[in-house]
Image (cartoon, rainbow, N blue to C red; front, side, top):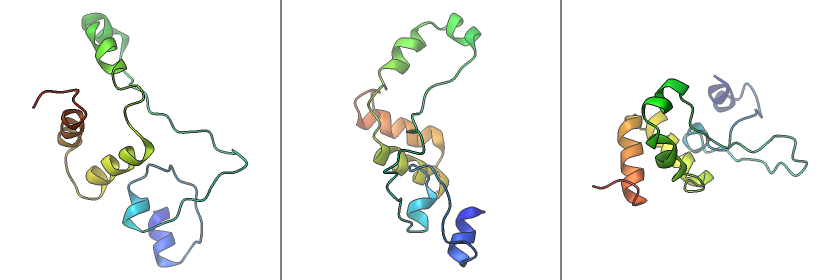
Length: 104
């Protein structure tokens, strides 16, 4: 709703994650947080402990992603899912293949 409100002129500014798909969709400018008011957004995998106990190899596999996704890349991935309507599964698969983390 907030992005639609900006588009319609109802509001002039809002808070957002710098990786939001809508930033590109609505051609919005991210302002510099020179006072570091907002903490950095860092994605992290979340899962039930039971899943990790059942598949302990997941920890190693998921850790290979550490530092592999830039803010710009995350924004593009979000755009493909949120705006273009691609499935998250397909977008993730393509990204992992491009990064050499998953065989084609």
